[in-house]
Image (cartoon, rainbow, N blue to C red):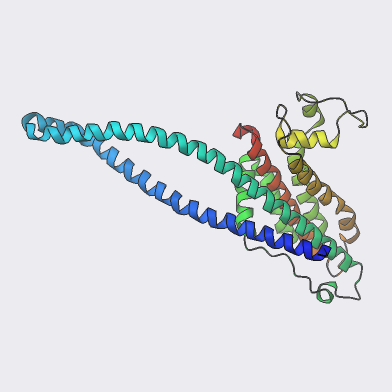
Length: 310
């Protein structure tokens, strides 16, 4: 089997796996909705009993035939207290496990999205350098347009509002700038979005922070004794954690490195009106958003302290 065939076979297998994740998600959604329904129902029942039980007990003091029914209520309450204790313990463990699995699916899809946008961005740069041709038509290239992008951006909104609302406003402002009539909209929008990524990373992986990590050792090949890989280790896994996944660290570092490599292309087309230049900027901005979400999702996966992850 040739290389192209193997790649297509792998992409097909990966798509099937993501389809399975979707199907499982719908199943969890259905069961989750049942939990919501019965949780609310139980709250109504217990709220009623909490407000009314004294009245029934007073009635039973004058009508003893009601005592058996009150005993049944007590038996139910004790049984339910025991049952829910086990249920909540299991659900908490299951949710913890589910959260890790969800984050794994998130990092897989977001890193893939970033890679696709970088790929299309590079193709757009090739278009800017070949104005006499239409690369998109010539090779029948489709612009990445994912239906779920809006939902992903909404999730990113929630995370960034919790982390740094001002940073999130800058991210939204970058898109507003790109869609404006400004002559400098491309360089301004791209710079703002890159700044969002840089500020988020520097928030969690400064050299001083790395040096305070339990695992830090002086890196003689680096100017300040801190290697890029050490910074990414702190960014994703924290000052005390072991490297939970070398593959995940490599994937995030690759995504960030790929984005920074686009700088050279962006600078060459920033002020021009070449065909493909807007597509290049859009692709890089989408790639940055996917990478920002990827970093946040990985941190949420491995940081036990939710506040530390954000």
